[in-house]
Length: 137
Image: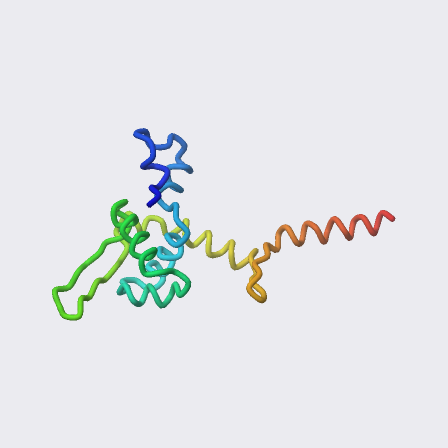
Protein backbone atom coordinates (compact mmCIF):
# COMPACT_ATOMS: atom_id res chain seq x y z
CA UNK A 1 0.00 0.00 0.00
CA UNK A 2 1.37 3.41 -0.90
CA UNK A 3 2.01 6.02 1.74
CA UNK A 4 1.28 9.75 1.46
CA UNK A 5 4.24 11.88 0.39
CA UNK A 6 4.53 13.49 3.83
CA UNK A 7 5.11 10.08 5.42
CA UNK A 8 7.89 9.10 3.02
CA UNK A 9 10.44 11.37 4.69
CA UNK A 10 11.20 12.32 8.26
CA UNK A 11 10.97 16.00 7.36
CA UNK A 12 7.59 17.51 6.63
CA UNK A 13 7.58 19.48 3.37
CA UNK A 14 8.81 23.03 3.85
CA UNK A 15 6.48 24.89 1.47
CA UNK A 16 3.08 25.67 3.08
CA UNK A 17 1.24 24.78 -0.14
CA UNK A 18 2.99 21.41 -0.37
CA UNK A 19 2.33 20.79 3.33
CA UNK A 20 -1.38 21.47 2.91
CA UNK A 21 -1.64 19.43 -0.27
CA UNK A 22 0.13 16.49 1.40
CA UNK A 23 -2.69 16.39 3.97
CA UNK A 24 -5.32 16.51 1.23
CA UNK A 25 -3.39 14.24 -1.16
CA UNK A 26 -5.76 11.61 -2.46
CA UNK A 27 -8.30 11.38 -5.23
CA UNK A 28 -11.34 11.35 -2.93
CA UNK A 29 -10.32 13.46 0.08
CA UNK A 30 -11.43 16.77 -1.39
CA UNK A 31 -14.78 15.30 -2.42
CA UNK A 32 -15.26 13.77 1.04
CA UNK A 33 -14.54 17.14 2.64
CA UNK A 34 -16.95 18.87 0.24
CA UNK A 35 -19.82 16.55 1.18
CA UNK A 36 -19.10 16.74 4.92
CA UNK A 37 -18.94 20.52 4.66
CA UNK A 38 -22.25 20.78 2.76
CA UNK A 39 -24.20 18.01 4.49
CA UNK A 40 -22.69 17.96 7.98
CA UNK A 41 -22.38 14.60 9.72
CA UNK A 42 -22.75 11.63 7.37
CA UNK A 43 -22.80 7.91 7.92
CA UNK A 44 -20.34 5.75 6.01
CA UNK A 45 -22.93 4.42 3.55
CA UNK A 46 -24.30 7.93 2.92
CA UNK A 47 -20.80 9.01 1.92
CA UNK A 48 -20.43 5.92 -0.23
CA UNK A 49 -23.68 6.69 -2.08
CA UNK A 50 -22.52 10.27 -2.76
CA UNK A 51 -19.19 8.98 -4.12
CA UNK A 52 -20.57 6.22 -6.32
CA UNK A 53 -17.30 5.57 -8.16
CA UNK A 54 -15.21 4.95 -5.03
CA UNK A 55 -14.67 1.46 -3.64
CA UNK A 56 -15.44 0.70 -0.01
CA UNK A 57 -11.77 -0.03 0.63
CA UNK A 58 -10.60 3.28 -0.87
CA UNK A 59 -13.24 5.30 0.99
CA UNK A 60 -12.19 3.67 4.26
CA UNK A 61 -8.52 4.38 3.52
CA UNK A 62 -9.14 8.04 2.66
CA UNK A 63 -11.35 8.54 5.75
CA UNK A 64 -8.70 6.98 8.00
CA UNK A 65 -6.02 9.28 6.61
CA UNK A 66 -8.26 12.32 7.14
CA UNK A 67 -8.97 11.09 10.66
CA UNK A 68 -5.24 10.59 11.36
CA UNK A 69 -4.62 14.18 10.20
CA UNK A 70 -7.28 15.46 12.61
CA UNK A 71 -9.50 16.80 9.82
CA UNK A 72 -12.37 14.31 10.20
CA UNK A 73 -13.81 12.78 13.35
CA UNK A 74 -15.28 9.29 13.48
CA UNK A 75 -17.93 8.29 15.99
CA UNK A 76 -18.86 4.62 16.40
CA UNK A 77 -22.21 3.77 17.95
CA UNK A 78 -22.47 0.45 19.84
CA UNK A 79 -25.54 -0.82 18.00
CA UNK A 80 -26.36 -3.68 15.68
CA UNK A 81 -25.94 -3.19 12.76
CA UNK A 82 -22.86 -1.01 13.35
CA UNK A 83 -23.31 2.71 12.83
CA UNK A 84 -20.37 5.04 12.15
CA UNK A 85 -20.77 8.80 11.70
CA UNK A 86 -18.17 11.08 10.13
CA UNK A 87 -17.99 14.83 10.60
CA UNK A 88 -15.47 17.62 10.23
CA UNK A 89 -13.40 18.65 13.22
CA UNK A 90 -12.74 22.34 13.90
CA UNK A 91 -9.52 21.90 11.91
CA UNK A 92 -11.51 20.38 9.05
CA UNK A 93 -14.03 23.23 9.19
CA UNK A 94 -11.14 25.69 8.80
CA UNK A 95 -10.70 24.26 5.26
CA UNK A 96 -14.11 25.67 4.27
CA UNK A 97 -12.71 28.64 2.27
CA UNK A 98 -10.39 26.31 0.34
CA UNK A 99 -13.14 23.81 -0.51
CA UNK A 100 -15.61 26.56 -1.44
CA UNK A 101 -12.98 28.23 -3.67
CA UNK A 102 -12.41 24.91 -5.48
CA UNK A 103 -16.18 24.50 -5.84
CA UNK A 104 -16.63 28.00 -7.29
CA UNK A 105 -13.71 27.61 -9.70
CA UNK A 106 -14.99 24.23 -10.88
CA UNK A 107 -18.51 25.55 -11.46
CA UNK A 108 -17.14 28.51 -13.42
CA UNK A 109 -14.49 26.74 -15.50
CA UNK A 110 -15.03 22.98 -15.79
CA UNK A 111 -17.74 21.36 -17.87
CA UNK A 112 -18.50 17.68 -18.19
CA UNK A 113 -20.29 16.59 -21.35
CA UNK A 114 -20.79 12.95 -22.30
CA UNK A 115 -18.26 11.90 -19.67
CA UNK A 116 -15.55 14.23 -21.03
CA UNK A 117 -14.26 17.02 -18.80
CA UNK A 118 -13.21 20.27 -20.42
CA UNK A 119 -11.73 23.37 -18.88
CA UNK A 120 -13.36 26.43 -20.35
CA UNK A 121 -10.44 28.77 -19.70
CA UNK A 122 -8.21 26.82 -22.07
CA UNK A 123 -11.02 26.44 -24.59
CA UNK A 124 -11.78 30.18 -24.46
CA UNK A 125 -8.11 31.08 -24.85
CA UNK A 126 -7.85 28.78 -27.91
CA UNK A 127 -11.05 30.26 -29.40
CA UNK A 128 -9.73 33.79 -28.84
CA UNK A 129 -6.44 32.88 -30.53
CA UNK A 130 -8.32 31.41 -33.52
CA UNK A 131 -10.51 34.51 -33.76
CA UNK A 132 -7.47 36.81 -33.58
CA UNK A 133 -5.68 34.76 -36.26
CA UNK A 134 -8.70 34.93 -38.57
CA UNK A 135 -9.07 38.68 -37.99
CA UNK A 136 -5.42 39.28 -38.87
CA UNK A 137 -5.73 37.30 -42.12
